[in-house]
Picture 1 (cartoon, rainbow, N blue to C red):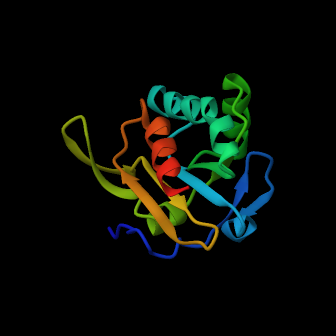
Picture 2 (picture 1 turned 45 degrees about the vertical axis):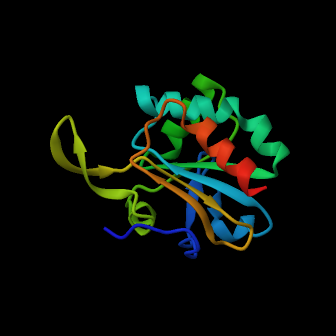
Amino acid sequence: MARLEIGDTAPAFSLLDQDENKVALKDFRDDRVILYFYPADDTPGCTKEACQFNDELGAFKKLGVKVIGISPNGSEDHVAFRKKYGLKFTLLSDPTKKIMSAYGAYGEKMMYGKKVIGVIRSTFIISPKGKIEATWYGVRADGHAAKVLAALNELS
């Protein structure tokens, strides 16, 4: 599984959001983007991570940064997840896991001491020019949004 490095061009994508609108990376050409991949809506770790990103949304907006979450879940699950926790950022669906694979966020990982194939919790900061500015693989959900914010403050 290839991992992206700082300076790499972010793989292009066009996926459906929670409202079934197409969203493409090129739509954010003038913005810095936090793109994070997570296994499933409304599970303990994914909920903690999403809520912490949501809690920091004001700070991200002050820096001119958009937050986008991607999971294999469909729009119906995303709508329910956003409503239940008051999430105010875009959630995209990657049911084929093609985009996750392009980012190195899908593949072999350790889970409860066993090797499994699945979504690797990963986060990327993408520059307005479409370049990778920071990467995190195998993320621990709790406290991660604060680490991303700290990295953004260093970049700004």
